[in-house]
Length: 259
Length: 249
Image (cartoon, rainbow over all chains, first blue to last red; front, side, top):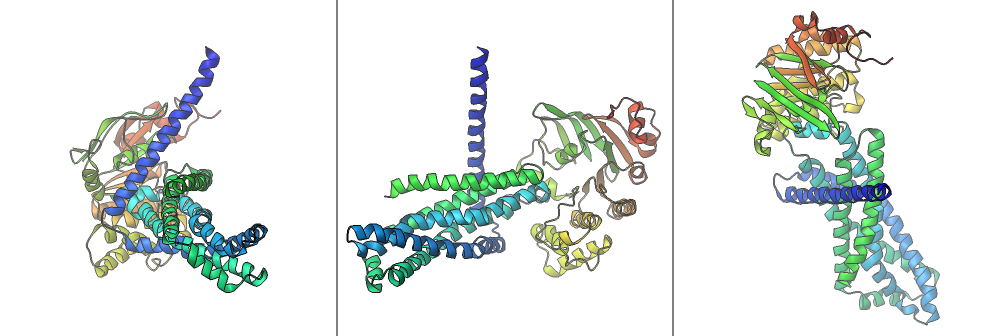
């Protein structure tokens, strides 16, 4: 009896905790969406966050995009050569990047670069009572801290994913054409033949939804940060890990639906 | 003006407020003193609606803020200024931006008028010419003064001070106390100060309430509390080791 109780009770308590946290997070998302459409809008804060998330993530996006394209070109070239299908190299690179790797890798990079910073910044505002100060002035912290990050992410994620795709395709071009000797004309003409607007749309849907996930998770974790430096560091780690896991899980489900 | 009735609050199994009853008259400066962990800051956070009590009432101008909707609560908050423990200045804004922020966001004043008010508020707290600095570039005492200027700029009728002098040297501590007293006289607001500073707090507060383990042990005029015969109050004021308050052995 005692053993069963000792095993079942903690599991039950854990389960309740998980459900409670999920409900809490979902309510947070609903509030964020509500305040996104409820004026007054804070455009200057939105522009600031677009700059923070967007331009400051640019270098890491350019680097990872270029090398992702180059690695794809290298690996796919040797695989396709076995079947004599080297001409299909560029569509394979472009489709992999546009439909899958661009949105996913860009989202993971932005999570590491900006998502962690968002969680830490909001967490610090929580522990230094800056959020309480806003509330005490009868100002809604969602308007000042959450909505600008949320909307900025919805705008910036697809743009950075698009940049990631373009840079990746050019990275693939350098390896395929300059190093492996594929014809330049073949490389670009095959992309034009195989890549459709549907593929681009799928990539766009994915990156917008990743933007929503990352800003939601990182803002939520920061907003309900624990006490002290340890509390902030803990929620920052949780924000990055949870965002990254959710990106990959959501990518699979969205990919299955949109395929 | 402020009436607290049977206020109770627990965090998990720990009951922090065990039925607090307190009245604060309009225009008076009340100090709440007591041991660390006695529920002082929790009580203050209830007065601005940052925490919801488990039971009890908080009446401000006769209106119970506990059962209020968000809109009415915001209306009450608009007439309350708060000086937080660490100042709670917005770290991405300059001193000037911090002070002018409530006017910029909550009123339709034009830029020139905001400028005049913000610069005057900074002058009142002795920080003229510091408006361009960021909170990280100024001292703890200055941060508290900026916080005070920000709390007062909207000319609130109630101001709450959460340990406004904790961690400051004696000279800065006294200057902050004098500043609070002089601004209270000038603006005539009702003030509640949470403090550990004894005996200095008796010199600026009109009345003092002693909170211990979640209940108000005694409240009354400063001199009455200073000369209290209650052994618990006396032990706390004198910092004695012997008495009803358990100390670290």
